[in-house]
Length: 63
Image (cartoon, rainbow, N blue to C red):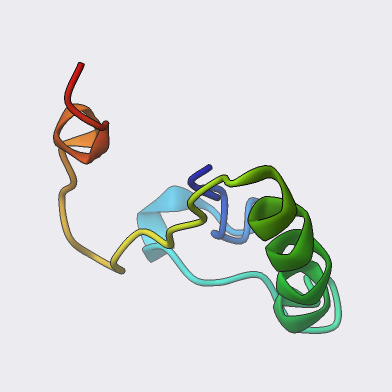
C-alpha cells in the first residue's frame, strides 16, 4: 500500500504543492491505525519520497 494523496487540494496548483494543514489531516493518527492492519495482513506500507519522481512499477515485487 502506498498512501499518495498528501497535498492540500484547497490551494491552487500554481502556488505549488503544500501539505494539508495538520488539523485537517492527522497523519500520525492515520499511521497508528494503518500500520497494525498492514502488519497483521502482511502488507508492506511505504511512504513516497517528497518532491521526487517515483517509478511505481519498480516498487512491485518481482513476479
